[in-house]
Amino acid sequence: MLSRHVLKQVGSCPRAARRAFATEVSSSPASSENVAQSVRPKKSEKPRISTAVILNRSPILTKAPTPFETAFYSYQARIRRALSNPFPHDFYFKQGSLLQTRFNLEERQREKRAFGPSFLPTEDVDPEKAAADKAAVEQLAQQEGEGEELTSRTHKADLTNDVKSLDRKGQRNLYLLLLAEENGKDVWRFPQGGLEKGDLLHQAAQKDLFAECGEQMDTWIVGRNPIGVYKPKPASNEPQDHVFFFKGHIMAGQVHVDGQRVKDFAWLTKEEIGEKVDKDYWEVVSDILSDC
Image (cartoon, rainbow, N blue to C red; front, side):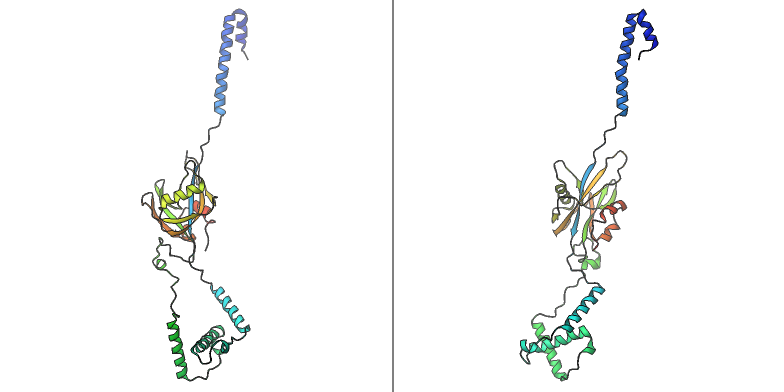
């Protein structure tokens, strides 16, 4: 709207009026542009996307039974033995043969383990003949390769606490953890890397795994979909990071780090990982890892 001073000048000086109108019109677009610039929101930065691989070594030994499981299986075995019919050894073994003698000795040991020594009847056998039969049975077992000691379920890596060995903790799931330098400090994390243009997430995960751990491993990325995402708190004036986790398995080989950006590695259980990684990182990955 024009001011009163401009309206008074219209009648006395048309040229001054045109100058005033030009001033008013030319100043209007500039003011509206300044207002638009002040209201326009700032352009948000795109988040940085990364992929990480939770590389798993599955258990290589069957899990040892708990004391309750051992007692339960022993109880069930005693019930089956008590309710079953006696084995007709006279039909299957020649009378007085060494095989029948071995079966009778082994059967007495099975009965003793199942029901206790007091359950067995007393044998009226000559001690010399009993000792000879036992020696003959032991010699037969040695000839057939029986009685050999089984390999211990405790590996040497368990005794020395070698966290780089894939043979440790044979009954547990192990996961690969790397010691890398990030933002000037050393942190433990899973194998991780950025996403290049044109790469799918699962392809980038496999590529980043080989880049940080070497190509001397036979691995398998399970599926094309991530199983979790980690969003760390961004620093000031930094875009938000999104780290997508993929699950993988190792079938053969071993990790070989460069010793520069990735300084060390370890194959750890879930509890051991919780002691090394940051709290925020652990809250995201703890539900992904197996308890056994």
